[in-house]
Image (spheres, rainbow, N blue to C red):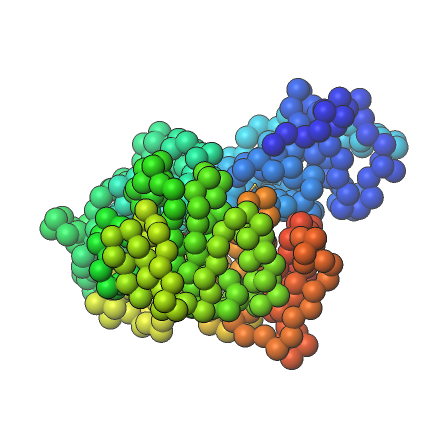
Length: 512
Ligand SMILES: Cc1cc2nc3c(=O)[nH]c(=O)nc-3n(C[C@H](O)[C@H](O)[C@H](O)COP(=O)(O)OP(=O)(O)OC[C@H]3O[C@@H](n4cnc5c(N)ncnc54)[C@H](O)[C@@H]3O)c2cc1C
Ligand code: FES
């Protein structure tokens, strides 16, 4: 996504009038042939690259908060001073230029050198450097941690062990563009293969850790190989809940968690005419949307009254249902699958549906076996403190497996959000290096259905009132989930800046 043609014509080397830029406002233009966004914060001006390094969204449509710039799509956070991607999902910095005010104009001057990302060298902040670090898991949290350890300048042995057959990839995209055929394999990598070599990260794929010996500081793989560690991050994520369905054979049933799962569905979808999706939560509905894009007839079967009801309430659920119905999805709500016979799916209400295959999206459970066996404290997730450290010193946990004290809700929560997992990996990495940084990011997730994106900030497991600002059916609204008059979470559609403002306000409240 590039900036508009009109903006591109404007050369910031010729200057921009100061009065055009109110505090916090942004202007888009060019410098050195590149798209630039000029941001004013008080009396300071910053000139940085105009596009996010995650999915290239226009940062001028985001929000300046303090000396950071937030991306409108998935809330990446960049430093205006250094360009660094302070918070995932963006991992790479944005370029920056020197901005100089002369009289009533601001001029964008020369491009500044890339940020020296090795904070740690010579820094007093990192108090302890472990002799070696092992990360179990090559997903969002695992990669976030490995990337941050090297970014901070940790140059000791770093091993990332993953049961996956692919290097860390864009898991959220599996149910979206990848399934809809709009994203080739190469787009799915979070980092190119060279990255692991250049950063000296020992990425061990197709390798499942089967035992964790914390007193001896050792992990063992299924093939018997062992790795010693001084610091450990457990980032084993979650696995799909598997249903036993009478008559179902393995070849008829698909789950969607890994790249291999997605490739299997894509391959079957090539010749499929009808698919049954069991489960009307995010993954099931995203799968339904992608299959509809491919022209496949889709039936969605779920026990709820409305899709997404448990997480987003009946109002949003009804709207999402209407959206999918407009695209031809047929819902069978208040029902489950009774049995499967050949290509016939029998429902509890008596109906029989034809389906070439069935996708089950009925939730996930955190992968806790290793942590349980190792004796870590567990409470529907691995219990961690505000520094993401488990009950064993030097052993951290991040991502879908971790239950942490969330300062915004005041509760100990565990979520299944991509951005949270990556950010927890990043913070755990800093704490492995001794920074003692609290994990206090406001939970955020997004979900995409056709051309409708839902952004959700905060965390509301229970609420006593829902307030809708705007028009749900026009798909232009902010839905607030409140308890005792306090806003716990806000879901927005087509209101990206409002979502960023809500996130910033929640951050500020907790800081106070
Ligand atoms: C299809 C799909 C779409 C999604 N879409 C969105 C979305 O739009 N927005 C959003 O916010 N979230 C989304 N999510 C959720 C998001 O992907 C997860 O919250 C996130 O991946 C969690 O990151 P993680 O690092 O904790 O776990 P994962 O990314 O699952 O990584 C876990 C890693 O641990 C490895 N592992 C597990 N056990 C072992 C072991 N014993 N030994 C070695 N390795 C092991 C696995 O192989 C894997 O590499 C989606 C999830 C799926 C499946
Ligand atoms: S495009 Fe910027 S965070 Fe995703």
